[in-house]
Image (cartoon, rainbow, N blue to C red):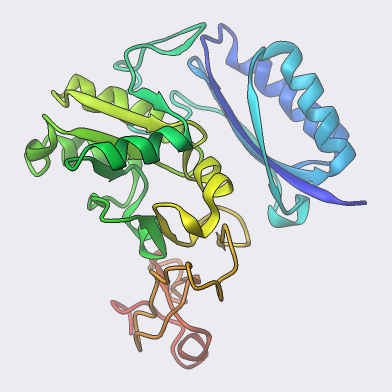
Length: 291
């Protein structure tokens, strides 16, 4: 039986997040799905994997409540997740600003303008001052990012508020800024936070990097691999031996090309993830700070 991974989110007011949590947990358990689901008063965010038929049943049932929700399909399955986790949180993405975000039945209020992958290329081609702004953790960008993108110095989404208010990016406030992240959800919130802080022309990509990469493969403005939050650790949108593939990641120890992240072996004292080639990982399983 073929397996798949589903990625999805929807911003909408939820009056009883705990009831949704219980329903989603029971639904996933009954279908044999593993993954992570976060529910808040502002919506739902999930990544689950399992047999194809189970995934299709999950989509049908979830759409009965979350009308209009869109699902992205990716390679993988239940084995890519250690367990099923369904939790209620103040935010479905933890920027630390639950009081600032406003949502209605149409989604985030006063967020960035949505662009299709084609419109991203059109805007970048028509304006010479377009700025791509990475809405992910900095380590994710070590193996892939949009060409010439600005990568903020953040380790968690909680770091973005201080980063935006630091003054480092004031030079971007009157330029067209295309924010981007893996599947689009982080930029739903980030674009709103940026607009609230004086950025005048903020965009976000429909479906995030995933949808852009699926559309253009190695021929677009995306360079390198995409970091993913499951056992795969990374994925590509085209063959790595393709002449259009741009290698972004390099081993922190020897500098050889690599797109593989590892957890520092000095756990639990160190939770650093770093890029390494296999040869260096075998010789030295520690991050540079712990070596």
